[in-house]
Image 1: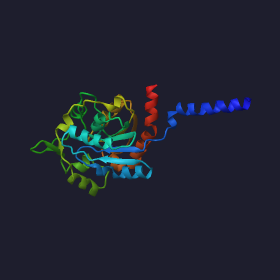
Image 2 (image 1 turned 90 degrees about the vertical axis):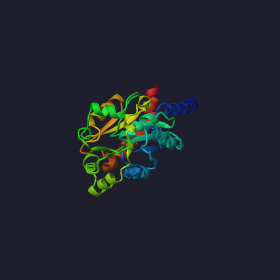
Image 3 (image 1 turned 180 degrees about the horizontal axis):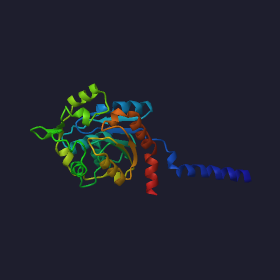
Image 4 (image 1 turned 180 degrees about the vertical axis):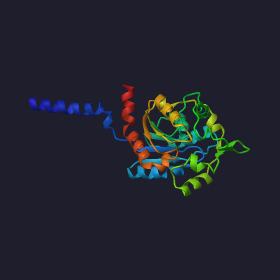
Length: 264
């Protein structure tokens, strides 16, 4: 009888222990990647290939860059298609998008990759002026079309945006830019998902598009789990895919457990 009671106690304790240990939860399988301004989702391919080999279900958003609202809507469309908890990842301007769209109920965590992370009522354009980058200090680097769309001077693109990529790849990116409407940078946010969702972040230490100090400030404010990658610029998502993928996988493995701990 005494042996039976001991076994019964263990049988009851095991499921309770499992419930009390969210760190042992299975990793998220759904990952959505959001690109930044002037480029498209193809730059995520190296990261995509690593993540899919590890068994993750990865989807890229091809936002139109016609307005901030349009880009957030495009992201929410992809989030609607996910079949469970999802990790939402944004590079550069994509950080503003995931900050706004990340309140979606499918989103369990956020990852900022050399990205902006404004608060409600803020916009990345104004914040960039307070902590200017090399881009912000380079006169004439950002060009504007007659209908108020912007693009980066193709002659300066390799140096400012893609300094760590092979020259042919950087030149191709410069010549295949997606013009971004002025308002994508100047529309104030109405939601800040990093206030309620756990976040991870990457600082590109040699970033010339977003000041690395601004990136650090964003992530400190959001209490993000932050990784600094030295010797790389704004093209970190494509130039250092293994390191970027490692941060994303860490977030996928821990997002739900971190969120559960925060609710206690």
